Length: 370
Ligand code: BGC
Image (cartoon, rainbow, N blue to C red; front, side):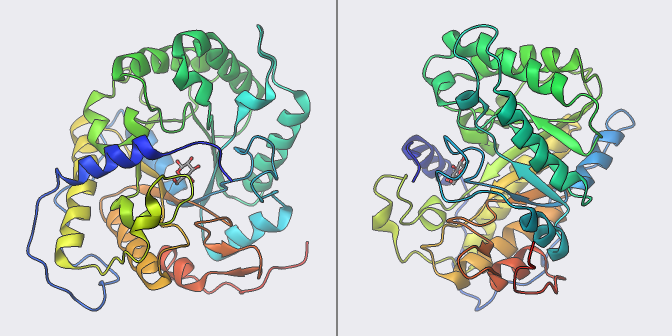
């Protein structure tokens, strides 16, 4: 069970909903598998950013290895990664994994903030399991909550974590991406922009060309992309946002989102109004990417297991196809926990979700023995 609350995100995301246009409500029985109309905006590169756009295609269809290494200790939230996970993910047709990591729980509290070597060894193993199977890997800093509570007291430690991580992985191939911070929240855009600039410089000291994934405040909200400041001369950046709207649908019954039990039973039918709202939001992100010549990675989206499976699969397919139609890569939240595309208990894929994500998939439904 998670020990933190997402209520502020809920409030922010819900208020963002009010900014979307209202449209007529019609109720088609199903959502088309492919977008019916060409999206308003698709992403295109410039000569300088061509490489980053190319690298972003390595992330095309990813899955988050959630609730494992970002728990206080791996296993605390029910997921301990194993070798067979990576083969399953590869065989199902995903191209990448995003690896959330709570480095802050495995590093000294005082300078030089040394990261526990045994923890590094564990993360190395996870990254290598992915890379050796041709899966790209994104490593981030996840759940550094103490930073958001007192950024001025934790900035030096946060930078020191990245100096160590960057130096440790400096010789790893380009298929390893670094994401400085998951979902910055409860800090101002200017605090985040300053911290991010310092972090990027620190990483660049050892990784001058590594592809980095960076996102805006308010839990990586597409609504705050306009507040994100990036070094104009750094072209090896991919910009990320997370998408969980409508929040009452995706987070119904989520134990960490207070009041969410009231939303149980919320469906997502794919009405024209619901699709218009979603299209509008993705267009905000796509338009920002186009105006700023940056590739876009939708690093998290998903609907919790307490929603009905038909709605989950419908919403998931719609988000994935619409992101793809706009030239974005994506990573589903998450592999085999509460949002799981894979059911760790029965050791079977949740076929409807898997088909929603990777329509061409024809993978076996049982786990191969390690
Ligand atoms: C958080 C997860 C959470 C998910 C859905 C992610 O950004 O890191 O812990 O389960 O959002 O709320």
